[in-house]
Amino acid sequence: MTVYIDPPAWPGHGRMWSHLVSDASYDELHAFAARLGVPRRAFERDHYDIPEQRYADAVRAGAVEVGSREVVRLLRAAGLRRPKGRAQRRSS
Figure 1 (tube, rainbow, N blue to C red):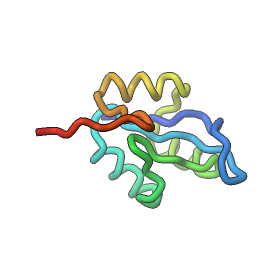
Figure 2 (cartoon, rainbow, N blue to C red):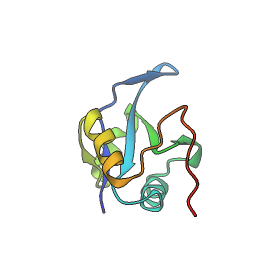
Figure 3 (spheres, rainbow, N blue to C red):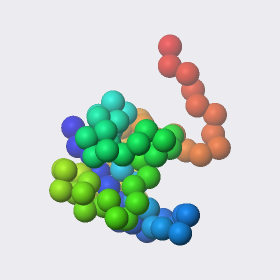
Figure 4 (cartoon, rainbow, N blue to C red):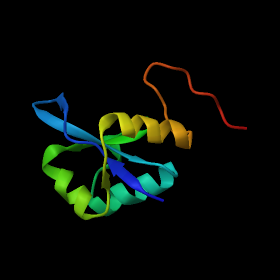
């Protein structure tokens, strides 16, 4: 049960952003983000957007630093990837 973060390389709203993901569950990810004080509105489909000013806080709290491609690989391997613009299958 690990949470991962990629470098702040994604521009938006005048800042650079990182992606915070879990390789186990969304519950784990939401709990980690809550401990950091990250608002739930920062969650987008399968990750939290973390501003570069909070990157070091996430790493100090235990997030493992990985590259952006590794974030996607981890999400896919865990079955947690939710690509933008694709319909989601419902679980039974």
